[in-house]
Amino acid sequence: MTHMKKITTIILIFFCGYISATQNMNLFIAVNYTTDQMIMEYQKICNCTLNQTFFNDPNEMIAKIAAGSSGYDVIEATSYAVEDLAHMNKLQKLDKSKIKGLDNISPRFLSPAYDRGNEYSIPYAYTPVFLAFNVNKMKELNIVPNTWAVIFEPKYLQKLKGHVTVLASSRNVFAAALLYLHKNPNTNNIEDLNKARTLIDNAAKYWIKFDSDSYSRGLVRGDIWVSMSYSIDIFKAIQDVKLNNLPIQIDGMLQKEGNMYEMDNLVIPKDAVHTKLAYDFINVALNPKIAYNLAITTGSSIPNRYALQMLDKSLLSNKWIYPNDAKKNFTFTAYDAKTRFLVNEMWTEIQMQCHDN
Image 1 (cartoon, rainbow, N blue to C red):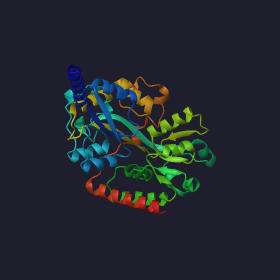
Image 2 (image 1 turned 60 degrees about the vertical axis):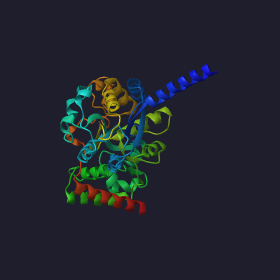
Image 3 (image 1 turned 120 degrees about the horizontal axis):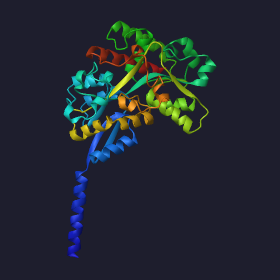
Image 4 (image 1 turned 120 degrees about the vertical axis):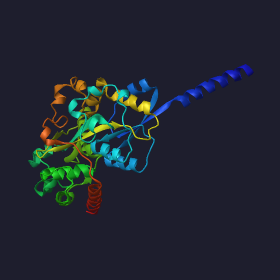
């Protein structure tokens, strides 16, 4: 009996030791931005567990990190978020000797204006922002959604009232308004921002919702006819329609005034506990096979040049996933402190007024 107790004790010590040795890598990332293959490959390499925490908008993530939230080992940060977090001293400078596969990234995505030399960030994927729509409804109403006027001008909105959503993102809504006004979508000019604010105020009474989360489901149901959209959401919505044989057709279209795209990156926060695991995750994400799987599974636009060579031409030719007019596609830059405060104040007022209506 004593012998059996000793064996049991040894087994428990070994088992408990194994549990305590198992590490968690904590990832803070946008919804629907990883794949099962990526997670499985990573966990096999690192012999750890990947924990994901999700956000819907970069400003939500920035606010959480700025307020002191910690415990993340890798964060997905869009262009202006990289600038803001680096300025706040919230990011580690990357040790390039620990990164394998950086040369897999197409040169045009390296050393961007928001992070020269990729000191803090590694390109991951990008997401164009455009108008998605109910094809039959647009034909019925004789509307071609190739212009931001469709969500800003009364001649369109009177036909669409109660069936339009825009993203719950101040940067994207202001950028769309500025593009429609033929202004710099990253402007710090107060006069231009006020003009955009007026345009938004006049249009908001026709919109049913500020929504970055469930709008694609509204398109699938047929409740929503036009949505300011992220490409990954519409890719998934179209897949859901096909999978369930639904009697609805959804499509997307870029706007003639120009479009933004959110260039998303992987960064390591200053207070990351598991730095080695963070580099392991970055290296997995840079693997062309993993990037290819991300593209075909989620519809993410990828900057990995070797993964791009594997993609079917039908996906590469989709302009709202891979826009080909560089002069009409813009990435975000960070606001200065004064502009950030002004736009945040405007955004709060816009949302309150829309709610009151």
